Length: 211
Ligand SMILES: C[S@@+](CC[C@H](N)C(=O)[O-])C[C@H]1O[C@@H](n2cnc3c(N)ncnc32)[C@H](O)[C@@H]1O
Image (tube, protein in one colour):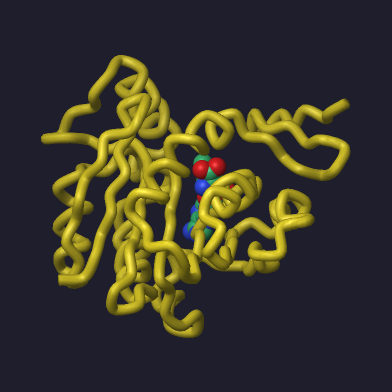
């Protein structure tokens, strides 16, 4: 039995775990990518963890990693905790607004910082702060992984993406898909170089390292 939450498209099961369809769809390709680009062990900070589905599925795929979920919305902590039950390598969620300048400083350095499906939902200035913070939070040999939809040379890459981008901009002209070259430039300004991986459904996974 599950309760439909009309605001998000997610459902909550009897264990208190919210289920977002998009997180269910992209968990397996993300797990494959992370297994390829991350070393065998380390500490990972996940920004904008949402339901907690990715913390559960992706940390299960990376048995050497300690996983730190975080979220700006405390209403999601219960779901993140529920997904993390029986997963001792997932730490309790922390409250984190990744669009708040300076957010990385108190958190120390991480072997990986993961961000899935946030940049298109926030204004460009906020996205810039998120990217700067990800660079600041990385240990010297760390990797930042950013997954989502992007504009390429100013264009969306499918009719569905064009419609979603237009819908976001109709809600708020300041938000919508970010240009891949702009993201790459912001990360370069923070001392990171980028490898771009194509993912299902026209999404990209950007893997950034120092140097
Ligand atoms: C589309 S959901 C993606 C959730 C999860 N990463 C996933 O892919 O299933 C966007 C998430 O970003 C969170 N969020 C929005 N603004 C944020 C911010 N400034 N800092 C951290 N998280 C934020 C929202 O609360 C929401 O959980």
